[in-house]
Amino acid sequence: MSLLFPNHSFLSPVFKHNELPLYVTDEFVFFRCVKFQNSLYGQTVSHLHNGNLRTNKNDGRHSKLFPKEKISYWADSITTARAETKKHNKGNNLLTFWAYDDATSTFPTIRDTERLFIIDGISLGFSDILDKIENGKSLSLYDNELIERISNEKPDCLAYASHVKEGAVNFLFFEKGFYKLSLREVQLRLGDNLAQNTNRIICAGTSDYSPYPENYGMRFEPIARVHMDEIYLQSEEYRIRMSTYENSLKAAREQPLEKWGK
Image 1: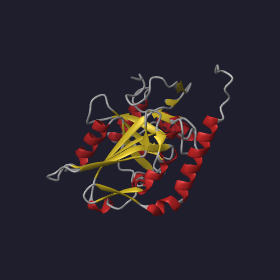
Image 2 (image 1 turned 120 degrees about the vertical axis):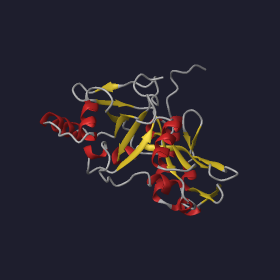
Image 3 (image 1 turned 180 degrees about the vertical axis):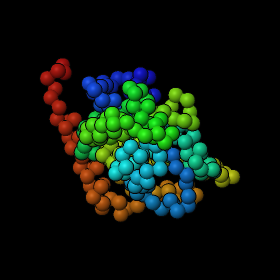
Image 4 (image 1 turned 45 degrees about the vertical axis):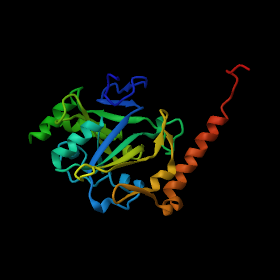
């Protein structure tokens, strides 16, 4: 396990900013869980995933730091994500998203190959600022200058400690970072139903996240069945994902073989 965060690969190098509580690294998995409602039937995985990025209402201690940013909340594990959701919503009909930073895939589908820029809100003193905001205390001049300096670095997300699971980590993604995420799978579990119907849509498989771009056009239908929305295959998003994926396949085939024997 990585010493940085529980959902980070220990094999990935970590770069620390010389002065600011910022890390640059990659190879993560992230999880987000939302209460499932019948209105979500018929929506493609692409539409459901894009719906995870919301307008910032500035009603949380973390979101208040960056009021102009669109935000999306993720967690380090499925258990953390479900615990966070059940803290705010009753019921067991849940939609769970499993994401990863796309650039770490052997065959990416997003053109942005930049590593993640992460604000460390747990250590390095930044947690003190979060505590001040949560307790309604005024920020010092130094605090505000630090926030401005961090903002100027254009971070992708803020890591902070979970209050519902000891030792767990949550991630507040900003719009720039959110669009670096691709999905491994989306799972629907109707735990409130007598039969507890479940199903999942796989968007990337194997250990190296080999993508299935067309599956972003899949949708859930009653009761937890899966169908393909052919219209998605005509979308600009699908065209970009497939083009990027095909280019990465081509690049892999064209790698020089000098280091290999015969």
